[in-house]
Length: 440
Image 1 (cartoon, rainbow, N blue to C red):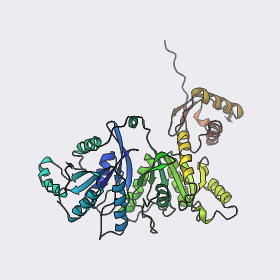
Image 2: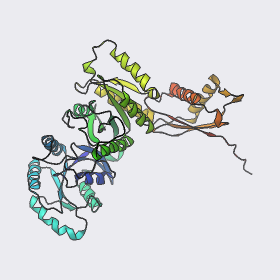
Image 3: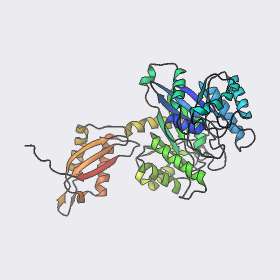
Image 4: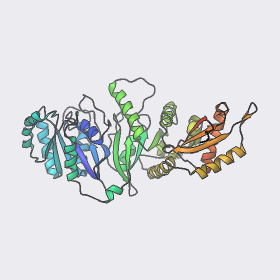
């Protein structure tokens, strides 16, 4: 198992900014509203020859925030499950009474702790941070997460506290599975069920998950990163800047994921929002599994599974290659199958055909159904697979005007019939063939 590093501290000391800086991308939502980060976020980081999981947590709060009890509980769990704690404080504001309370809680845990004095933009300001020694931690780093100052020093300190494991170098990247769907379909409950803890705050207010939440989970002795996104709302209007940031974060998360699980509510069916999300996933060329949640509520109804299957194929015709799995996040029904299917579709997503395999299927396609229009016959002069994730094929043709959508679909179906490409989009591109000049 990878070393786990938890970032803790009171609200607005820069935990999410530090998290983004450590992982090298803008992952967590940054906003001036205290308590923006409500749940825990996990992300795999590689530094030099070692890897670790860094966890961004909600801020400590006793009085102010709506979800204060939940957030405090999240912090307790984060510290308990971590190997190293990064205790972040505000170097400009000085020691706050809440910092003292947090320090006491961390010391009781007896976890290796690095005190991170943030918002120290230049060396001359470090003297202001010396008062933080009263918190009782000897390992202190003065950083500016916003400007990147001394982040490498912090990474080196983390590196020093990770036991070297030769297997780390050989460890494959963890499969990243993203959960997408409109609010209240059960994405957060899915994560809670898989992790067997209240990992994500579940609330009956739509949009409780503001940011995309990542969790490091182990299923059937295999590790995964699972991403719970903020609910995507119908339409393009945003009520406020927080909703806009949530949607933007979701889009970034989709790009970063390996496999997408589109979750629908069994009591509502496949609606307009699911279709829009499916199109977004297609635009981003992601492999997809469709999961119908809350199946425990209607599975006894005769013909329910057939109805959903037909509705899916009718409303999302452009994603006919995606499998549908009936699940219950509440009872855990078929959740393990989601991970098994994710492994399968990712392998298809990364499949590379040899030229000989491609030659065989194209020759067979042309023999079965040559395409002719206005007395001209479409000829595929050259063709090859040029990329994976998703699989991309380029065909050089004699006449671009003869490339019809129906024949593109026919070629795609031939590739799928022969080689599967189960659960993944495949991209076919066409270009005009030009005869190469003979070298002198």
